[in-house]
Amino acid sequence: MKLKSYSKINLSLRVMNRLKNGMHNIETNSVLVNIFDEINIQKDKKNLVIFKGKFKSSINKKKNSILKTLKILKKLGLISNYYKIIIKKKYTSFCRIRWWHRKFC
Image (cartoon, rainbow, N blue to C red; front, side, top):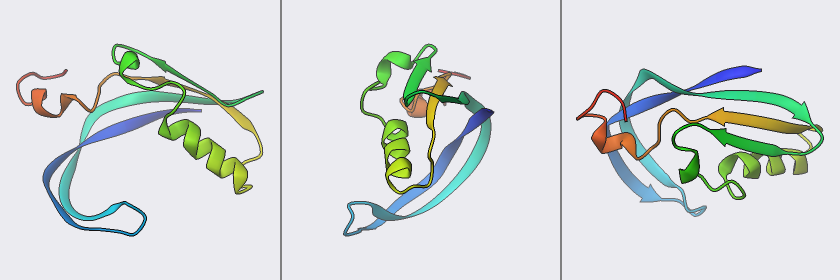
């Protein structure tokens, strides 16, 4: 399965309060933009996440939200298979400020 993970630009962001779980209530106004990373998901013998592209070095390959999510879904019995996920990072979250100065980071 191939997916596109689209970006958004926060036009405003207000942190309201902190929740017991460490997350925050927020108010935000955002717009989606036609900038995306590409994700390819396939069944495999073990969970594996591979990052490709210009920004792959900025991601922790052993500890990331994708591996954590797969582990939680497996533990809860919501998935029974293992997956190989390949993410082609076209952009990084560090583009936030520089994006306004150049078309792309």
